[in-house]
Image 1 (cartoon, rainbow, N blue to C red):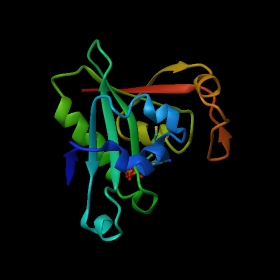
Image 2 (image 1 turned 90 degrees about the vertical axis):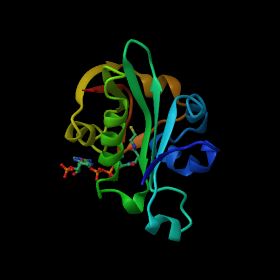
Image 3 (image 1 turned 180 degrees about the vertical axis):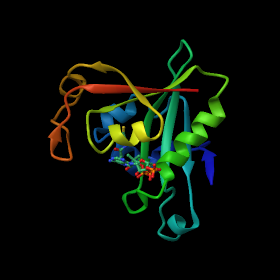
Image 4 (image 1 turned 90 degrees about the horizontal axis):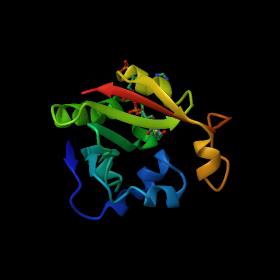
Amino acid sequence: MIRLVQGDRKRYMPLLLLADEQPEMVARYIDRGDMWVLTSKDASKDGVPAVAECLVTDEGAGVLEMKSLAVAPAHQGRGYGRALIEHVARTYAGRYRVLRVGTGDSPLTVPFYERCGFKRSHVVSHFFTDNYDHPIYEAGVQLVDMVYLVREL
Ligand SMILES: CC(C)(COP(=O)(O)OP(=O)(O)OC[C@H]1O[C@@H](n2cnc3c(N)ncnc32)[C@H](O)[C@@H]1OP(=O)(O)O)[C@@H](O)C(=O)NCCC(=O)NCCS
């Protein structure tokens, strides 16, 4: 089940920190836009409030941006990330021109988004080295630039 979060968004902080490990960066957008969570009976048995979450914000000029997308480690690789993207694409189609996402140039995320219909758009050089207070590593590679990908809605 996928639903819009109406109450406290901070209860999903463990998931938000999976997508973006620095709390000060998460604080920049946690209260913006719409937050969606995917829940399942399996997860609630473990006391986890959701299996996956994402946040989407209106960036103007018809651009909807996915600021955070995370699937709990035990539930990754089962189609939940794709399910959230498809839900967002269906829900906001007609109201926005494109769905945009920014991510590190990592083999764990860029191929996932490409598989879900996104295409590379542009790069913001040194985003991770300029904005984070410590080096961020993913799959053993230091993230330096932010890669933006877009999917038409
Ligand atoms: C990245 C993430 C959201 C993917 O979610 P997921 O539920 O594990 O992915 P799905 O099972 O929905 O995968 C969808 C498709 O992408 C493919 N895919 C997923 N990861 C991939 C990878 N690293 N390389 C290549 N393909 C990949 C899957 O094989 C699947 O393909 P198919 O549907 O054609 O068979 C999840 O792994 C995650 O939360 N990671 C940690 C947090 C994070 O990095 N978030 C992104 C921040 S920008």
